Length: 381
Ligand SMILES: NC(=O)c1ccc[n+]([C@@H]2O[C@H](COP(=O)([O-])OP(=O)(O)OC[C@H]3O[C@@H](n4cnc5c(N)ncnc54)[C@H](O)[C@@H]3O)[C@@H](O)[C@H]2O)c1
Ligand SMILES: [Zn+2]
Image (cartoon, rainbow, N blue to C red; front, side, top):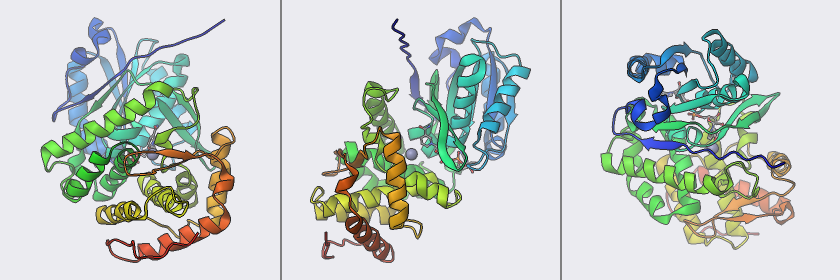
C-alpha cells in the first residue's frame, strides 16, 4: 500500500484589503460552507469589523470566536476549545476554520483543524509580521506541552493564506522587530540582496509599522514569503531530510523561550540564536569575521538582541540535546558560510564547550556596546 496526499495552497500578498474569497479560493463558490473564525481580543478590537465584513462578503455561514491566546495558553486545551466551537457550529468536512491573528492564533487553529473530523480545512489571515512571513504560511501547527514548546502539533497545510501588510501598522515595534528577525533568517541563509535592503530600510520599516517606504515594505514581505515557500516546497512534511535551512536560528531559541517563561518573544530568541550560530561559525572559520561583524551591526541597528543572561553553556548543551532528538540524532546546526547562503554543522561534537563558552561570553560583552563593527576584536577558538 502506498498513501499519498498532494496539496496545493495559495499565499496571496494583498494590497491593503482582503480579496473576495471566491476570487482566490474557487471551491467556496458553491456557497455551502460554514466557517469558524478564530481571533484574539486585541486583534478583534482593532480589526474585528474588518473580519466580520469580509466574512459577510464570503457568503459563508460564519461565526467569530474571540479567545485570549498567548504563549501560556497555546495549549491542547485551547485547540480543543476551538474544536468544541466547531462542533457547536456544525462544521462538516468541507468547512473551514479561519485564523485571524498572530502566530499563536494560527498555530492553535491549525492544530484544531487537523484534529476536527480528522482534518478539516483552515485559512490563515496573519496579522503579525511573524505570522505573515512565517507562522501563517507554512504547514505546521503546534501547541506547548508540559513545558516544551510546540511539543504537540501537526503538519496541516492551510487552504489559503492571505497576507495583508496593512495590519502591521498597529503592531508594536517589539513585535515588528520579531518579524524582522524571521526575515533576517531568510536573508542570511538565502539572499544577500534582501539583507542589504533590510540594512538600508529596516529602521524605517519598523518605525512605520512596515508602511514606509511602501514599495520596499511590500517587496521585503513578498520576497521573504517566496524564499520561505521555496525552502518548504521540496520537503513540506520534513520527511525528505531533517536538514532544513529554515531551522537557522531555531536550535537554541526554544530553550530560551521556555526558560524565560515566554517573556522572551519567539523572534527575539531566534535573533539571539542566529547571533550565536554566526559567532560559532566565525570561530570555526566557516564565516568571515568581517561578514560576521556586518551581521552583528545590522542586528544592533535593527534593535534585535544578540545575547541573553539565559544563554548559558548549560542551556546551550540542553538545547543541542533536545534539538538533536528532534532532528534524528544530528545537530544540523544551520550557519551561513557567507551572507545569503546556509550550511549545516551536522555533528554536535564540532561545537565543543570551550567554543560555546567563548562565543556566549563574547556576544554578552558585545551586547553592551553600540552598533559598530567589531572586526578588531580578537576571537579565540
Ligand atoms: N507554525 C509555524 O511554522 C511557526 C513559525 C514561526 C512562529 N510560530 C509560532 O508563532 C508564535 C509567535 O507568533 P507571533 O509573533 O505572531 O505572536 P502572537 O501571536 O503572540 O502575537 C503577538 C502580539 O501581537 C498582537 N497582535 C496581533 N496582530 C496585531 C496587530 N495587527 N496589531 C497590533 N497587535 C497585534 C497580539 O495580540 C499579541 O499580543 C510562536 O508561538 C511561534 O512558535 C510558528
Ligand atoms: Zn521561528
